[in-house]
Length: 440
Image (cartoon, rainbow, N blue to C red):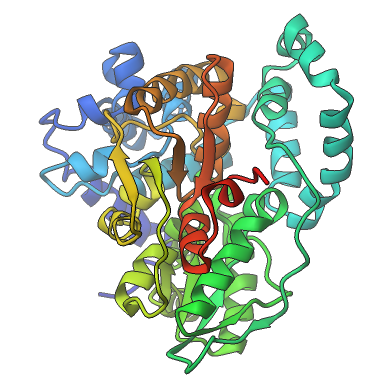
């Protein structure tokens, strides 16, 4: 099959994908906005109907754009669909069209402009660490939350303030090469990520250590930037494609066997580099380069299960609840590997969450753009976590961790939240539960 590089070819492909939907309704109970509101046009089936209507009539109404904006892009419908409808490709194309053709209000443009001038840039995010640490240490945050002033001024800023993780001194910067412990079994590249790198550097440190302990030479290029996931998720395809090209070039130079990713949203986007480049109208050569890189991308847990264990697992007496990040379970189909790795740790008990297919409300920057709906979904997920009685929530995505921790703190039932990589790292190094959770 040739790459649909012309606008006419992409238009025909979009029409074909629309016709795959038979409107059976299997997607409805898995769609978070349909669960919240029970409205047909806020379900995948309803949105596909709107996509077909706006495609045929070539008109984007304010109402239709509102329903498209309400979609979290969680892709639970993709997992649920018996007909194999590529809703992910449909919503990406639709959002790209919205960003090209729809005139947003001045306030919306300002908010989106600020978000995308900040979040895809790890260094800019890193500059926030100092002021944010000072703010957290001052105790002003409790006053701000108690008064609700920020919520009234800007719900998006209030959300950012509330989900910000507690910050400590970051660990030393990772070197560009972390050599394998013992005989090297693979040479892998590691994505640092934007939010992960800026706010969860300890997750990257744990990831590199686990890979090295399992026999991998870990290449961590300093020149790497954003993968383009957040931009692509919001329909900013040209921006996403530019970021993708830069990252592709970085990892092409390193000649690694695989590119290991510890953030679900990034991994899902990188596995579809070719689709992003196609949607942005890139030439066929770049699409092929994107596809070649996409084929090397693997989630950390997926890769470790493929590689097989070598390092000894030490006991970790702990009860954890595992949360399936949407872009890991639905976007990449990775559900068994993280559970298999956790199950391999002696004395670790793992519980699944009820309603695991329903998104937590983070969804890239959805919780900033649609804070009300996101908060309601976060509260639901928090109650599901609490129902397990687990001591710790384990997730494979930074946005999910921040969203759920914030919801549970708001409900007065705070829970420790950590990443799968950190649990594995603690077991491989024989750390105590207290050390894992930062309780010296």
